[in-house]
Image 1 (cartoon, one colour):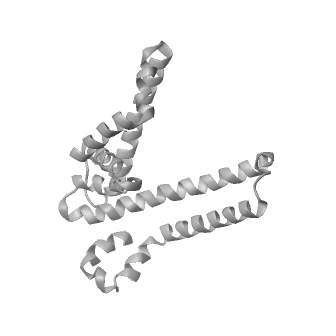
Image 2: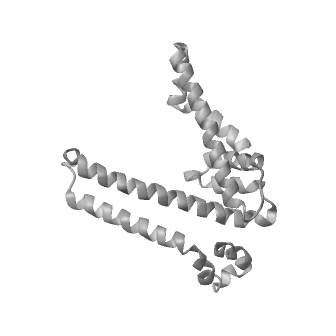
Image 3: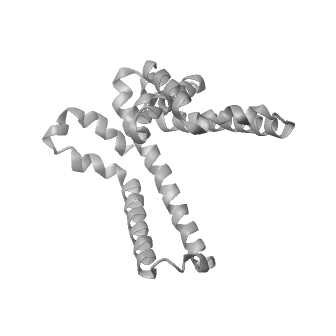
Length: 193
């Protein structure tokens, strides 16, 4: 929490975009007020949906009330802000879980993040193909071979992630025989569910 406050204060005094916020509020109109209200409402809706998703993901491990799920999401966001590439978001969410369920919670959260990544990649590739097909003139400066290679690589990575996601229950069978994971056998069985 202290690190988060330090980070927020640091950003408030160093980030140029945040410094420009005061200029935005100097000429305060009805339209600006409406936009801010819409953003705030959408932010709360987003956090609520994220909390429901987290509650669903974690439901096979531990029951969470919606209040605890929201606290977990907000904890994850807070810790994610001060860690590289928001990696702390995974760990921040599991603080609200019982101690014996935290490792399973990290696995479950990782699995949820993987499904979100796959969805983003899948629809991103479809969008990229549509853009390339219908807005080809904009991409004349790009080498066609380069674009084709990127698309093929993206398709392969997405296919492999989808395959891994739908075969996730085989992970314990592969990993359980590794000596360094012997103490986590019971936690790896989570993937079978």
